[in-house]
Each structure stands twice: as structure tokens, then as C-alpha cells.
Amino acid sequence: MNKLNLKLLKLLYGNKEEYISGEKISNKLGVSRTTIWKHINVLRKKGYIIDSSPNKGYYLQKTPVDIIAEEVYLGLKTDFIKDIKVYSQLNSTNEKAKELARAGSDTNTVIIAEEQLAGKGRLSRTWYSPKDTGLWFSLVLRPEILPEQAPFLTIIASLAVVTALKKLKFAPVIKWPNDILLEGKKVCGILSELSANLGGINFAVVGVGLNVNQKSFPAELTEASSLYLLGEKKLDRIKLLQSILNAMARYYQRLLAGDDSKLLKEWKGYLNILNKKVTIYSSKKVYQGIVIDISQKGELLLKDEQGKTHSFWAGDVSLRKQEGRKK
Ligand code: ADP
Image 1 (cartoon, rainbow, N blue to C red):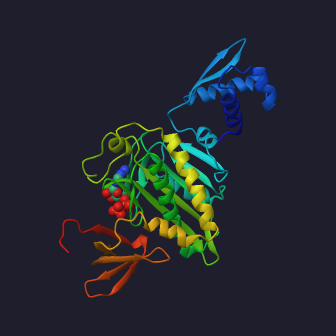
Image 2 (cartoon, rainbow, N blue to C red):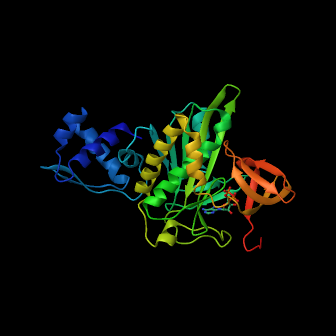
Image 3 (cartoon, protein in one colour):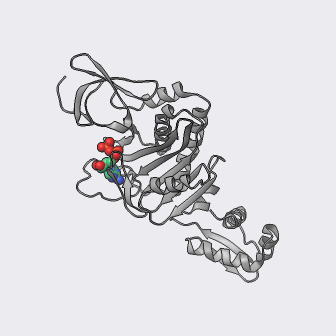
């Protein structure tokens, strides 16, 4: 994020009804009129339409459709996010976030890519992330929680996405541990990664891939869909991202405040596998049984056909609902 662009945008937004003179901006921001002019051009290149007139000054006519860090930041209702970085292309926002976190980058930073070339799913799977259509972002956090509470980061990120989707009148369902479905189709995946040692968590990266405006998917992604395809209208990705981050801020606060039980309860309310028959693939073994609960730590508890209970962590398993089978 560029601080001057941010301040400049704030002033332009504050004067939405009229022009604001270069002199006034220059006085308010304490920089020369030439600097203002240069930054106005930077904003124009980012997609803002700003009219300028020699006598009247500058006037913001239209905001961009591309994701602009300053634009996202200005619409947040929280000071939870400290920095936002937007890249036109990354291999993976999680990888970039980890790289920055390792280099000591600020905490509470959002890394966004307009396109991921090798978006990450769990267990080395890839996440299809075409250009300019979805929300592909990762949050760098340094939460003061115990490493074993890390599954809660995925839990609160799912709740944040669910909250934003419900505001848009969708009816989301969570597929344990990290996917969000609409009408049985996968629209969002969440991937949390952790760097921890005996002393606790160094940093956590929470990645979100949300299919927003895609009009189609590659044939092999038979279970995928987008908000556009299901809601039949194009959505403003910046507003949606702000809505997710605002919700994430509230859930994160609750997590730090030790509200685990209520968060877990809320999350369980959206799960589609409680009391259902499932097949679990875990390190070359296959388990079949009924999901009896999610433990207080976020583990899936499965009762197999012999009545034995097994617990699974998100990282190790792949899960299939046994649809169409008789009980
Ligand atoms: P799983 O759902 O099998 O546990 P992940 O949550 O790690 O796996 O997601 C990766 C899988 O999701 C991929 O193997 C692919 O089948 C599917 N996938 C990849 N990209 C997308 C996308 N943009 N939307 C929906 N599904 C996707």
C-alpha cells in the first residue's frame, strides 16, 4: 500500500460532489502539486477515472474494477488489517505470504493475486485461480494462541467467508475441513499453514480461494462453481473482500479472547457431514463410518463399522461423502 495514494484517495472520496483543487490537496498532504499530479496519474493507471481541470482541480468519477490495495483498505471497518499487497500474478499467495512472513513482514498483512499460476490446495493439490475473476488472497498472522489451536484459523476463516456469502443471500455449507459449498458445489477453499516451534506460533498464513465471477470451469473440476454462476450476477470483488476481512477481524478477536467453544459451535452449525456416512482416505488407509462429532480441538471423530472411534486432523485426510448409499 502506498500511504500518499491512500491519503489522496481519502480526500477525493471526501469531495465526491465537487472538484478539489491541487493547491488544497497540496496543503492538506504537505507535498508539492507536481507530486500530487504524479500520484493522480498513478491512480489513473490503476483504473480510477479522475477528471482534472486547470481551474477547478481534480474530481473522482469512477473507481476501478481491478483489486487495488488502497481501495480495499479504505472500505474496511476495522484496523485489524495493517497492510495490503496486490500482485497481478503470483505462483501462490500462500507461498508469497510465507516468504514475507519469514522475512519478518508485518503481521496482519493481506497478500492478494489477480491470478495464481500454482494456487495451492491441501495435500499438494492445485487450486485453479484464473485471472481477474476470483478472490485469491492470504493473510499473514502472528496469533497468540497455542499451536494446537491452529485449526481454529481455518474455522474462523470459513466463518468469515460464510458470513460474507450469507450477506449476499447465499446459503453456504462447510465441507470439513476447509471447503465451502453452495448448492453442493465447491466455491471456496481455505488453506492454513503454520510455522511454529516449541515456544509457540511464529506465524500463520491463512489462504482463501473464492470463485467469484468465473463463467465456466475446466471440465475436470466437476464439483466447482462460482458465485456468478449460482447467483446469476457479477459481483464487486473489492466489496466482497472487504466484507470477508471485516468479518474475519471480528472472529479473530473472539479467537484471541478465548471464545473457542462458541466459535466451534457456530462452525458446526454449517457442517454437512455430522451424523453422515463418509469415507476417509488417510495416509494410504481407508476408513468408513459415521461422523459422530468434531472434537473441541477441531478433529473429526469417526465411528467405524466395528464401533471404534478414530480422530482425524484436517491436514492428513481426504473425505468423500457416501452419497446415494443406503443406510
Ligand atoms: P479436497 O476438497 O479434495 O479436500 P482441497 O480443498 O485441497 O481438496 O482443494 C483442491 C481440489 O479442489 C483440487 O484437487 C480440485 O479438485 C479442486 N479445485 C481446484 N481448483 C478449484 C476451484 N477454483 N474451485 C473449486 N474446486 C477447485
